[in-house]
Length: 325
Ligand SMILES: Cc1cc2nc3c(=O)[nH]c(=O)nc-3n(C[C@H](O)[C@H](O)[C@H](O)COP(=O)(O)O)c2cc1C
Image (cartoon, rainbow, N blue to C red; front, side):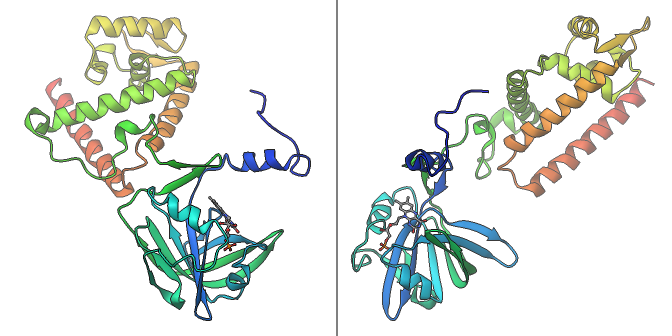
């Protein structure tokens, strides 16, 4: 394991403790309220969701904040999730000052709590509980209404403002919205499937190599085909491999020499015990990769894709069996 950049106890090194907390990236909110006709707001990144049912959120306020008494007494507060072009608002509300709303475009929501214009999202909350939290007070609110806008959120990480970007490992499939209808030859469904497959397979292979699972795409594919069709000949597996016979024979030779597969005199292939263990590892790893790769695809679309592809495979296997007798 690599040695830590900094470590210790919070009491021995407060600054290092703060920097270490800063490794947890957050969004940036401005939390607002109105009490006795006066409005208050402060920048906060301690906001967090708590529960969906009932819909609860929390945040914590430093006891020394000028607006502490107002938030301690308030009935409603609003959480304004800042967009990535609102650093100015974050700075403004991170300072103690009277009348912070003077030049800030806003409307009044529940309990007159200010709702800022141009934000990425907002939650209007009724304050339900408060808990002691050391030098902070933890406030819990029940969300009565929420709004989400087509804006990118502002991020706070390592003590600095940042913006979101797709992780390179998922960039290939990180689609926020369906792409425009494909044109030309890619309208052919099988072409689309091959393109999607190639992208997924190369990402999974890259991750598999990184994870030290040590098999090439073709070796892993042959191993999985053996597992799915025990006792088949290599010839029978060819349609699943997308390889000609000679290349498949080479891949098989490598798997045999690695002790993962055996082939009998009729070229019928079976997994060894070590092969079965390796297949399980590969499948578990592919599942993990898929979670990342498909995380922006809605669950119901994935379920439809799963059942459609399974149906296509079943139908084509039946046709193939019938044609090969
Ligand atoms: C990114 C960021 C996050 C902050 N998060 C919190 C927070 O969660 N709670 C808090 O009490 N102060 C937080 N602060 C500090 C307050 O915004 C700051 O103390 C502000 O002056 C309080 O305003 P007030 O004194 O008018 O109440 C944060 C500041 C920044 C820049």
